[in-house]
Amino acid sequence: MAVVLGYDESPGAVRALRIAIQTAAAFGEPLVLVYGAAAPGPGGEEYRAHHEAVREAGRIALEHAVTAAEAAGVPTTVEIIDQKPAQALVDAASRHGARFIVVGSWGESPMRGALLGSTPHKLLHLSSVPVLCVPTEQ
Image (cartoon, rainbow, N blue to C red; front, side, top):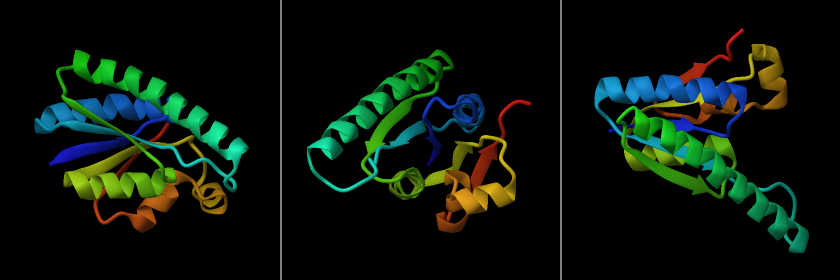
């Protein structure tokens, strides 16, 4: 089993990282850090350039998360997946036999999340494992 975390260095993800590290340590399980790197839009040269920029941002974000997890003694696996974040997290959770998925939120209202299609909202509908949604600090 593992704990899967969606991570992108947003304020909600930074707080979710702390919770995910604490939880993984408590269960004695590894932390799977996932970055969904699907670039929007059709193919072509512009798409490829944008896609590579998104993947590079993911690599940098996940390096910071790995450093924090290793400092706490939690082993990590890193996955940069060419899918939208919610689907990337669901697929990673399935592959790793996740106990649950951890994601941060922006503190948005449930209605706003439903209208905007936020990753936490999508996960609640797609995931077959529990989803722990960590609010930003107020």
